[in-house]
Structures are given as structure tokens and as C-alpha cells.
Length: 206
Image (cartoon, rainbow, N blue to C red; front, top):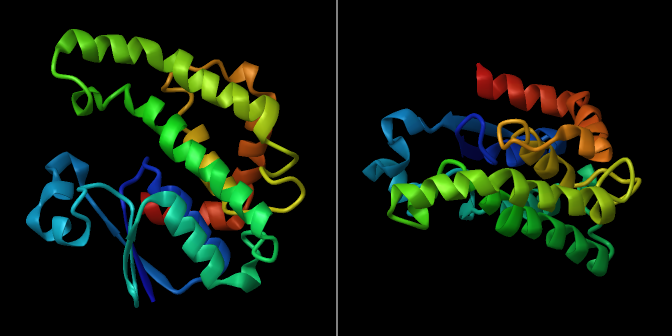
């Protein structure tokens, strides 16, 4: 049994979808950002970073989306959520997810998390103005070079797909012109039609 700590509208959705795709036995617990629950003593015992997602397993607690996605894929090999029999292809999947985590998500966070990087209000405003360009550039690269086919890795669905779907959901609020990303948006629609995606979204909204 796994337990996923999540907040709606965050990158926790990617791991939530992967758990549903894998057919895992899991429960969820919502972390309320509005009351700063992520920084409560109780939650900091689970994740000292004060962020979501966190995944409680029988071997301990995992944080960071790329690690959690890889763990889910490896824990449920029958679900075929990653090319586990090809070490190079698996590394490529991890490279894609690392790019989303370290570059695209960070660019997005500049829209509302300015105090992580600066102290002056003017700096926060400048970061926000940059977001459409920086996030847009990241997704333009995905559109041109990184999205290989109907799924990120090509013909086979993988742990890269729920992660891309999750970040794609933020594009409108980030001010990115969706018309410039036809392949990404086609991927988003294809993902939205998957039962596991509908299940995860319903559980987070319930």
C-alpha cells in the first residue's frame, strides 16, 4: 500500500496518474497550501522540504517527481510504464523527466514563487514577465525535438507522459500561446482520454 500526499494543481498529479496506470494499491492525502499545511510540523516530518508530492512506501518516503515516477515504473513492471529492459532508453526517459523538473517546472514557478529566488517586489514582477518566454521556450523545444510520437518516447506510453500532461495544464495561466504547440496539445488531449487520468483527476477534485 502506498500513500500519496498531494495538492490539486501541482506536479503531484503526475505520480497520481502513474499509480493509477500501474494498478497500484494506494491512498491519497491532500495537503492544504491555503493553510500552509506543507510547513506544519506534522508534514515536515514526512517531507522536510515542505513540498508535494511525497510518496510513503513500505521502504520509506520518496520525494521528487522523477524519482517517484521511476520507482512506480520499476515496482510494477507488468504495467510497462518505462523501457526497463533497455538501460539507455530508460535513461532517456529519466532525462526527459529531469528536464521537466529542473528547467520547465522551475521556469513556471517564477510566476508565483519569486520569493524563493529574490527579496524585492520589483524582482518578482520581472520574473513573472519572463514566464511566457521561458516556459514557452522549454515547451517549444519539447514540441520540436523531444516529443517523439503519439507519446513522449514514441509509440509506447511511459512515465514521461503523465508528467508532460501535468505541466501542459499550466501553459494557459503561464501566458504561453497554445497554438504554437500543436503536437503538445494533441498529446494533452490523448492523455485526457485515458481512464487513469480521469481517475486521478476525480480523486484530487473529490
